[in-house]
Length: 114
Image 1: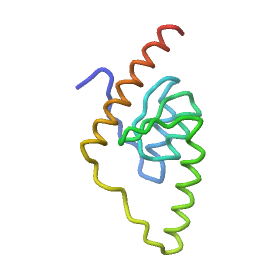
Image 2: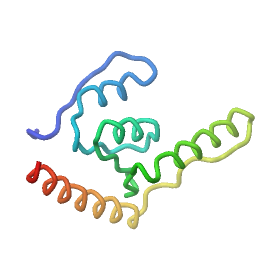
Image 3: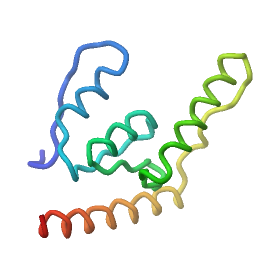
Image 4: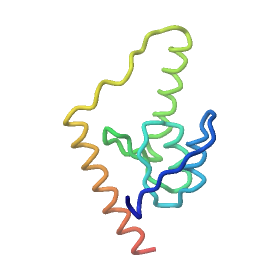
């Protein structure tokens, strides 16, 4: 239990959970996701999106990530075996931990000055 974390059940269907996350979030909220379209929506709404491997999605890199995602989706649709993501390793966990800590500290500073 935490005052900062909540669980919510949404209707079944494509992107229902993503839509609810974006609907409920506010500017400066931090969302952890490997879903690139969700990350783009979070950024558009003024939030911060972090990949579980530690990449912080930004306005500077999200369009390229969306294009790459769409390209890979096209390849998969054409029957090309693209493979899945590699398992998380210790370095990934450290990178995520560091990115999350830096983001939280930055968000604390931003919200104090707002």
